Image (tube, rainbow, N blue to C red; front, side, top):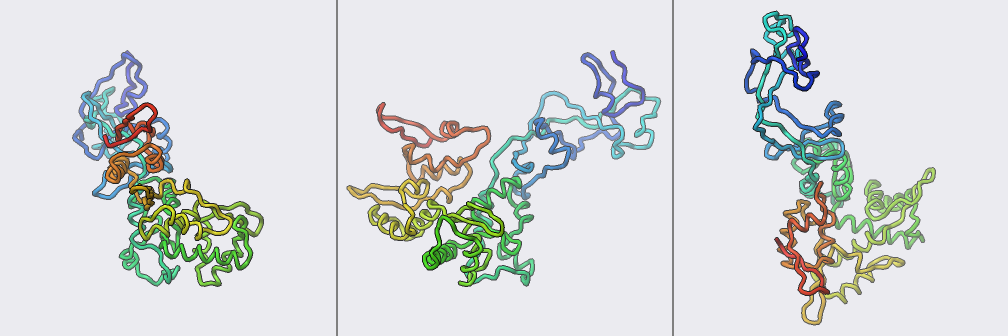
Length: 396
């Protein structure tokens, strides 16, 4: 048996023990429950993040904590063990030393004996989960940016800002259980913009006004919607009374950059995003007959753009009443990101779905370790009346 070096009474004494070796143990003078010490089991790929302190625990007192790296979110779960797991502190940990002799290992009475400070009943393990971004949508929807607001709000007291439901980046990090990368993606998905250090979503009516004015100016100034000069567009919209920040935000929401030459940025309006915007505006009034909806839609979209019914996947539902077909709004963006809640709402909306109709409403669901097929097996029941019939999905 390999003998431990005399005087090594901390965890170092057991790190290099060979198989079939043994070492004597004893209760540490400070042995006890030590509830502030918890074992955490890590995947090897997470060790660098932990050792370099690139992780954070996030969650409010009434929420289950999650651990976040820079790019991923993990649920923290306790797993009990039937084996006895003994915790031995390092010899240089002064908080577990009663006196200097205990720390430097020179107590000749217990040479070669390691001291157990705690028996752990189990450990915490990490399970990768989807970011909990529904709260982000809820927080930002309280106080959308509306026409007439001042962009700079330094004159507001902090208490008033908090009462108005305004959040800086650090506030959102504290409130939302998501990694920094996932939080940024969530803000982008909501078309949020940072205004005066606060992250805001812009009121739909205000965004509609800015977009319509951009399209109006494109006709007056003979701008190509495939090659919009950012400086020129922003300058004209600013002269029309729109804040510079929101003029640029409009380009970002409804377009994409196609060129970044020196001193200028060129944008192209995205055909689908623009067409979907006007479809949503029309359907705010309620459901419509398909023919009248299409006629109004084609009339509202900019000249040169082609509206296709396929663009509205995940935005509308169609219903047949006798010989007539109606369309009504039902946007995937309004649904929760939790799979259980999402499927519950979907099956309340329709007890049975054909796959082609259901797919646009679940393809954005992100559950680490579970594929789309796995989601369907977990939450739906598939039936097929005949071999050539379309599969029908209902609640499991």
